[in-house]
Image (cartoon, rainbow, N blue to C red; front, side, top):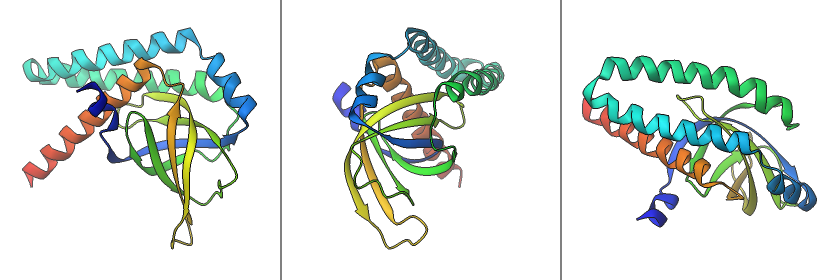
Length: 184
């Protein structure tokens, strides 16, 4: 069951910034992931699980707490993560095909020569922030003149708490999508 959850893929929209990194930068990044960030992500996962459980019993209270958590994520994420990373500076909303072990996305950047990437992702609507590194597994040309490349990436050095946060995000996205389809 656990393995299937990792490969569960959905189309999503995230706020993302990225850049190609060298093998040395990739190794350095993997060696120096912050323990504090790990603890924060574990707290985020635990809080998300409890909020999901609370939603069926006290929906209004759960919504208030979820909004408060989003606000806290937004405030804390920009002060900590943005200062530590030097990425492209072109953070924007991007459509991605996301799983707990990788993603694909369209871009105007030719990454065919790159092997590794560093990502700063903000998941919506929770505003949870993730800083992940990945290995490029494929770069394909597309017919879209504005985004002529499709890039496929496997996340590397991802911690269990980060993977669980992604899995939880994907399940919540699927729940919202199915609810929206039922309501129409």
